[in-house]
Amino acid sequence: MKIICIGRNYSDHIKELSNERPKEPIVFIKPDSSIIAKNQNFIIPEFSDEIHHEVELVVKINKVGKYIDESFSNNYYNQIGLGIDFTARDIQNKLKDKGHPREKSKAFDNSCMVGDFINVEEIENISNINFELKKNSSIVQSGNSSNMLWKIDEIISYVSQYFTLKIGDLIFTGTPSGVSQVISGDFLEGFINSKKMFSLKIK
Image (cartoon, rainbow, N blue to C red):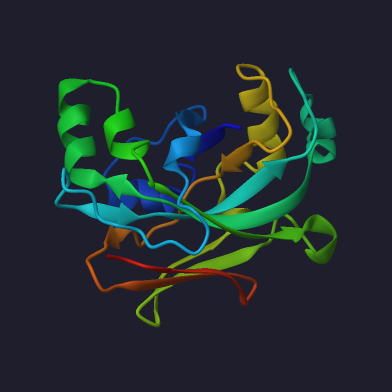
């Protein structure tokens, strides 16, 4: 199982970090060791002083596929969930400045929170999914899938040109604005269309 992530897929998030808008999807991968075990806390690693939360819609692949035409992408998933791509922002900025790969800031152990999933039949419109993240009961991130630069079916088609998609693979589809640092004692809750998908303590 692999975790494929899409970067800079919301214009408001691109602006808040003063990044350049990409001409095609930015893709990176997290290993399965990045997933936080069920009912476990997120423990801030010693190597970073600035861990940011990035809440994202997550697509779970249910069929093996390669070179998938966008018009058939919807046949390769039947569940959508919510997760957090934790990012060591201080390390990411240092690696970015040097032009080095950024796996240390994105793919470290337990850097990936995967919450519950909803069957697509329960979602009225895949292109209009509201989701949000609360930190200590206050909304800090709020997004809608309509604002994605590349929609879910486009993403699946695009990444399948490079990676064979297999059953159980997860695709993180990008984060909206509002990313910020987490500190010990924070309590995070994620929602899709007002339905709670996860809760997580920061230690």
